[in-house]
Image 1 (cartoon, rainbow, N blue to C red):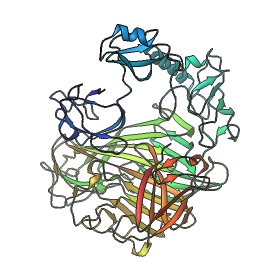
Image 2: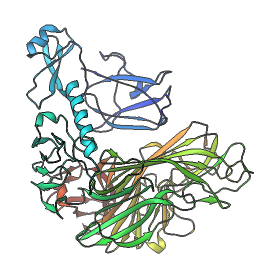
Image 3: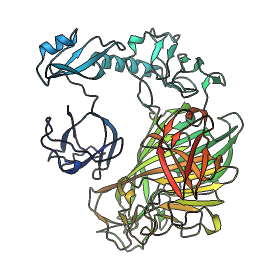
Amino acid sequence: MLIRWQSTIVDRRGNVQPGAVLTIRRMSDQAIVTVYRDRDGTQPYPTGTVTADENGYAYFYALPGLYRITSIKPSIDWPDVNLSAVFVTVGGGPFETVQEGLDATEDGDFFSVAPSGQRGGLFDLYENSSGSALLIGTFPSLEAVNGAVAIANQALEFSFTREPARWSPYDSDSDGSDGAIVDAEGWVIGGVPAARVLSSIKDNEALIILAPYDSDADDSDGGILDIDGWVIGGLPTVGGGEVTATLNGPMYVTADFDSRTLAFTSWFGANRWWRVHLAPHGPNNIINVDHFEDVAGPDITAAGTVVAVTSTDWFPPRQDAAVTGGDATSKVSTGGSHEVGGETTAQTVSHYMVIDGRRLLAGETFSGYAKRVRFGWQDEVTSYNTTLADGDRRFTKDVYTDTIITPLSIEAFIETWAREAITVYRDGGFQMTGNGFDTSGHHYNDTAQARIPKASFTNSASKTAAPNVWATSLYQPGRGFQTSWINRGFGFGDASQVAGSWPLAYRNSGGTWKFYHSVVERQDGSFTMAAGDSYAFHGGYTWSPDGVQGAADSAFLFTKHARPSMGYAFLSAGSSNFYADESLIGLETDAGVFGRFGLSASAVAYETAQTEIKA
């Protein structure tokens, strides 16, 4: 049976995108799949691509499963599109029995049967397939969805009203006294009638309360939580009832919406924490990585030693010029921490903060534990020849930065939209200053295939010679690794606009300990954007304690498409054990399964790898 997918394709401003070309891949192996124009599968689209019509409308039919839908323009990357979770009412229902549904429908119709034998508010969906009932799946009814939304809205009334700010469980009589017992999947199983809670509440779904930390990753733990969201039983607790912060568990977050500042503190080895601060800085006062703290001792909230003040660019500036109406200023970068002739070149016009599914509002602050934070902002940026243009200073592009922050990791999607025709000469992609991690470096997949001391560590080989460089790892003994990475399979991260003679990873030409991942390098002026054109790239930053054992050079945990992942490198043949945290025990990767003493991996020669942790 083929399932229909449909959508009107718009850009991030909401503008309809006629003619947008979508590529459909299977999530399991990222292979391009055949999709169809018709339900019977007789009219395939060519080569797994679907083109939106003049109204931006696109649709296709495909077999049930998980798919990834991508587009270059507009920049789209939608993983885990589930074509089995469809809501249909063709044929009617719910019926008391499967046979009643078959008797009331024709071949190809759908019908539902209730009760399903699952949790309340759900139904089983069937297709009448030549007189036989084909089970499609179990789904919430409209009544259940509406009920869950109502409960979530009530829960929000209790949210962020006490310290530390956390989600609160649903309080059945609004007297502030109820507790809820939840299982490892986030389902309320006691304290509040289970039938009133109709959906899972894991990850970013804004329903009721955060799922509790599962201490041994075996999905068996339950937690008893009070009305403020504190763990009061069922799980190991510390410090008066907080969920303990671990490598893959919660981190401690402080955020101030109005000042556009956010800091997150994560486990960084025994009795140690690592804190990353994001804040506006530099002459343009736009958001960037600002500084780090190394925090010793058992208190995750304590002040630490400032390791490095990084008042330079991490989220990048660009070097471009307006095609018309500019002055004769020589090529320089704008945006980030750059100015031209003493004039600012960028300003932030909007931003958002979302902490475990709850959006911070103007005037609000947050201080507490969280699993995932989204922090995004829009900057408007000049070109180098429109900053001092005889009083005609104008912004020629909008730059959108969207980050996903998890313990020890910042994942970022960056998009640039042209307001007018511009010629782009350089975009250095994700930039990283190595202060505090300044003993040695290693460009993953470079021809050097080595970790090189700071004094000699410069650029990777040219794109032609080393076309697959995707990460730069810096090291400091006793502290660990700081790594920047770029997704070479997403948008302009594919280096299609980088000249073959230019390196994909390079060190600052001024000799400072700062590194870049090339996204655009066209000094010949061959890359021009028209008004409304855009490009995007994806990657980020991660920090890892000094704990690699065996023959491996380095290893790091990070999130990619919001999923836990791991990267590592061997410089030569050998084996290694990557120890992280007990929360990973039992979790599978393409390289193996995390055991009590970590993940064992080996290589027969130089090798770098990135693998999803299948949580």
